[in-house]
Each structure stands twice: as structure tokens, then as C-alpha cells.
Length: 280
Length: 123
Image (cartoon, rainbow over all chains, first blue to last red; front, side, top):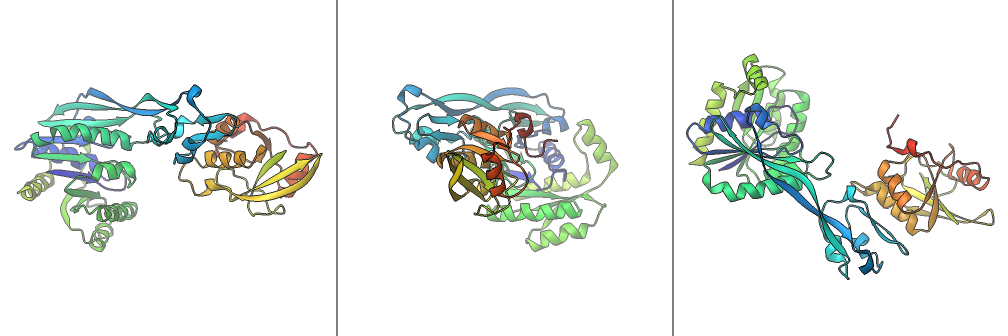
């Protein structure tokens, strides 16, 4: 069963919940924790896991073969990222900082004058700790697009999927394309909310996204005890999403989190029980 | 020769737009023998682009035949694109498109300082 831990606002506790849940489930099951927050993956820090690089994620960007170019401008026409500047006499100029490696220009060129050049967009790491197998994708700083790294990591996960009872996907914050890429293929999502005005606003956005993607959601109310829980409750209610778990705002939780030790709270045990129930 | 001037409205009397990549219009001003012989308003395709607006804008003015641009601030990608396309960049003065065109004709505008165009919010 593949479930996503997501949340919209950053800092609500996605990684905390994902890592803690993974460790709890791993006591009786085979679990893979997938950190797909490729811009800033840090689950390995929360579980003090030493990662090992599995592979580089390579993207193919265009490389012009000048002697073949007939200066027709077709490549610039098809480029959706405005990464190709074209002048009638000079031909195309490739602005690779804008390139997302879609290869449309290579396909569109009528004379095959655009070859490929490989660049490293990121890395995939493996590891294990506290009984949990671990995989993370990490974007190369300065690279424009996170989704290719998310998707490359998902491909590695797909090859191992059958070995595991549970795959827990930790997504990035926000609702943009790399979050969508991480969510796709998950059978249920756990949006983690905090009882604050900013948290509740962003919660609404992630719940809308999950509804669009037709992924069933079960809410987790984190940091219960501070703020105003009604803010988050109202948003869940508005989107017809129930709250399946409440995690208290406790100093002990924050301390363990900051030391890279899994959370050991009753609320996590209860959440794991519920999740095990869904699998049946 | 043609010079492009970012504009808020599609007319010479309009206030000049302080931005480049997402200005609504460009006034393409044609100059012959030291006089303005023609001016034409062109919509900026960059205004709706999610990213690389400056590139789209630069490509458009190049397509229109402009070999010079009068500009406020440019992002670094726009600046690089304009250099690649061989378009000369001049610093604007405050005021309307017409006032800038006149100042350009009189040789009162200076060439852009590359250090100023590292990005819209560089101090």
C-alpha cells in the first residue's frame, strides 16, 4: 500500500509524521520510506540514516550540430520554455538555464541538427535505519525542474515495490508539479495540518489538489493544543475530509525530532494501527 | 533603425513601463535620418509566460526588427537574451514613451550598465 504524507504549508510536520509512522509500521511490516521532497530532503536526518548514493539523475538537453542547421527556426517555435532564441541569419541560441529537457526541439528539427548533451539534475540515495528501508531523491542546486528527479526516484521505487507492505511517500510542501508527481500513484494521502491561520489556508489548497487528483485523504492534526483547532477542523469539514489522527504539541516530540530520534508517542501508535486497518 | 520602448499603453504618449519581461506593450519606433518616421504598438507575449518572460519579450522585439531597446530594469536572463540577440540596451529617463524616443534621438540616453541588470530587486 502506498500512502503519501503531505500538507501544503511547510513546517506542519510532514517529515516528522512520515518518519515516525514508517518506524512504527516497520515493527511488524516491511516498510519503504520515500523522501520525495527533492528540493530539501531531510528524512534521513530525522532518522540518523547514512545515505549512500545509488545513481545520478541525468537529463538530456539540446546540443546544436551547426553544420546541419538550416536556420528554419522550428526548434524555437516548439520550445515552451522560451529557452531557444532565434535569429534569421544566425540561427538558434540555446539558453539552457530555461531548458526542462522535454526534447521537443530535438524531435521537431526537420534535419536532425539538434543532438543531446547529458547534465546531472540530481541524485538518488538509499539507506536504512530503525527497521525502515529508505530512498530519497535530491535535486542538484540550481537545476530548474524538480519533477524529473521525483519521477526518476519513483522509477527506482517501482522496481522494488512488490517487496514492501507499505511505501510511505514524504512530499514537498506546496501544491506544485513536484508535489503532484510525488502524490500520483498513492492510494491514500495524509495531509498534515497545524491549527494556525496560515496552516489552515494552505491546508485548503492541498485538500483541493487531492480532490482534483482523486486521491482519498485522511487528515492528521499536528501540534494539537496550540492555536485554534477549529481553524483546521473547519477546513477539513469544508472539504469532506475526516481527521484520522491528532498529534499533541509536546516538548518531548520536538526534542526527539531535533536529535534525529524517531518520535515515540501514543498518537503515532494509534495512527499506525489505523493505517494497518486500511490495508486489509 | 528600429528601437523598442516598453510601454503601459499602446501609444506614444503613454507612460513608459519600468519593466521589460512583463510590460504590456512595446512601442517599436522607426527612425530614419534622425527623425521618427513610424511607430507601432506590439503586444508583449512575455506578459502571460509562467517563466522566461524576458526571453519571450527579447525574442519578440528581435522579430520586430529592433536593434536597440530603451529599458528600466531587466532581469539577468533578459539581459543575457538581449546580448545574444545583439540588441543594444539604453537607460531610460522618467516620462512618456515619446519623451524617451526624443531623448534617444538627441543622443541623451546612455548605454545600460551591466551591473544594474542582475535582477529586478538588486539593490
